[in-house]
Amino acid sequence: MPELPEVETIRAFVDKHVRGKTITAIDMDLPRLIKNTTAARFEVALIGQTLEGVSRRGKYLFVHCSGPWSFLAHLRMTGSLLYEDKPGQYEGRAIHITFVLSEGRLLYRDIRTLGCLWLVPSDGPTGVKGYDTLGPDAISPDFTTNRLYALLKGCHRPVKTLLLDQTKVAGLGNIYVDEALFRAGIRPMRHSDNVTKKEAVRLHEAIVAVLQEGLEHGGTTIRNFISGNGKEGQNQDNLRVYGREGTPCTVCGTTIEYTKLNGRGTHYCPKCQS
Image (cartoon, rainbow, N blue to C red):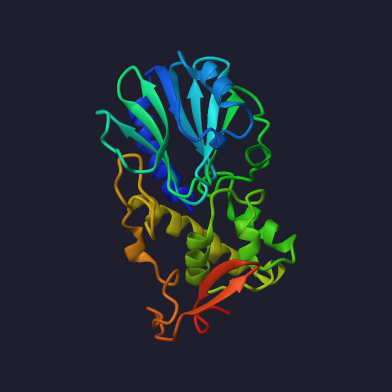
């Protein structure tokens, strides 16, 4: 699933290329991707509107339009927004919605077709629960060490489970949580209220560091992720535990272990993390 660095990489590229362009038509071959209205109403509300930019909260992309309605997208497992200046540039790439623009086209791509799009008011609450209840974004100034420590102390869940809760911290997913916990020396299954203040400081620093590293390398491509320009990310070369089960830890040489934690695949070093 695209996480914060992947979604932000998409946002930055698409935002740069669609601003000021008008939606002249919408071609849709999979109407069920629109979750809160009909495909016909979605099209009527957006055709003729000018795109004013693309913002991100957590793993959601908000495409702002000039009129009363805009649209929200969650990419789920294999979704992406692409911009092409020449029609057919991404032909055969699992494109299910095409926004024809006054110049170029904005495409919604999704191999497994698990993504979601919503027609939402341009201002105010969206009515999409998962979006309206998001916690502070993991790279925003609101996500401080003190806030993280308060969250940890206020919960008895495994620390990884807490960090994956989007109402607590927005944007983190399996890859970057495993990587941050490794760098902080904390086992994913430790109860969050057992994390000390010193460890919380390390964890906050590690979260920021792994997300920044992901952004600098254009995101992580394990299988299907591509950015708004069709390119794969390169951050997979920097992963220290995620997807490396059965291989030696890069720090101590101990074999990286894999387990399931609340149904989520989890990777950790049994020596470096306690």
